[in-house]
Image 1 (cartoon, rainbow, N blue to C red):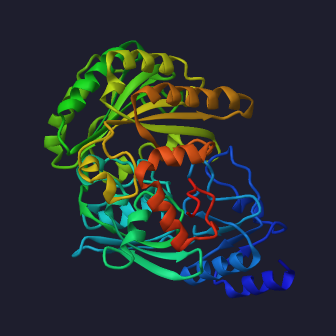
Image 2 (image 1 turned 90 degrees about the vertical axis):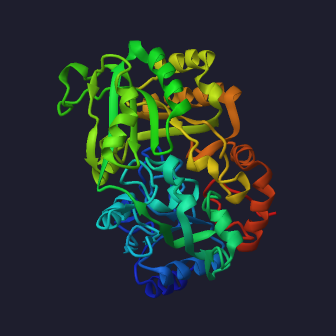
Length: 463
């Protein structure tokens, strides 16, 4: 690269090109996870598809690999890569809703809160995650678990069309009628095929008020609660999407239940995708297992539910998350004893051990219909290490790895690539996750990114 070429790119962008000597550079390269400290060669802060196209073509000419920043929320820090062209979509957060067709057109830098805000004007929503500051793009491209998953599927299941800038520097569209194989790959295959500048999602009637349960019990009741959850998930309806988490109650002055602050606990969280009165009845068994430490359950606005967990995951904390799809045996009596051991061994009070109930609409999509791997899982085990001091890095990372490795005996064979750790051993992880679909994804990669320019992800090298 020479100065003239860089200046020409800066002039061509409607947005802004940030260089290492720019006063904005250090702030622009920061992502949500404080563990990530990488130095891109250039950061192209784009305003639209034309900017993305210019940045990709520049990277091709100058031999730069490309990272893509949507919300910057991926725990592995895939938004930035050392010596890469970082394509930053954070200025592209537009959302347009067609209420009659129940479709939302969403730019690649949008956050969950952007989609929910616009869709809820019309009493609509699409399955997203559970923290409103999460980027839509990364969440969707590797699956997307949220409070509507058992009723309406994963985020990627509701993707109906996408505009993509490919590794060869073209703008293409993916839908059931245009490049359908690319749409198949975007539904769970990660950011391997290009920069998705616009997503189009199917919307569903949700809210504006939904019944939500958030009830916690003392740690001494964990075994009883896991057993109760096993019974509950065996017979609950598809409108119910829940999780169980071993946690520590925040020891914060603004936490409303004084006597619960700082105590280890187990909690049930979940939503009912239907009438609130029906939801209250359907979720009642989770609220009556024992005497709760607190019970914040009730009918709430959908947008409040979507942002409820935000305070627990602030930017700048240190994160290491691993997730594995598991069978019903992950709540067998033997497995519950293992859950109890790992819950008790959490090295940080901010850390959680979570079981997400899968099934329902997630399982009704055949394994071959999308790239996403793990359709038949009963649960997703997520070891979510969170801490604040780098001197504690080693025990927190080791705890999450150990918990997920221990549950390999109950595995469905794959991992959840939105909880990828630091993408260590990624070839092993991606092959296990995609299974028989791996070669099909390699062929797709060869078509749209034969030079593997998009490699800062759960990477699938081209065949």
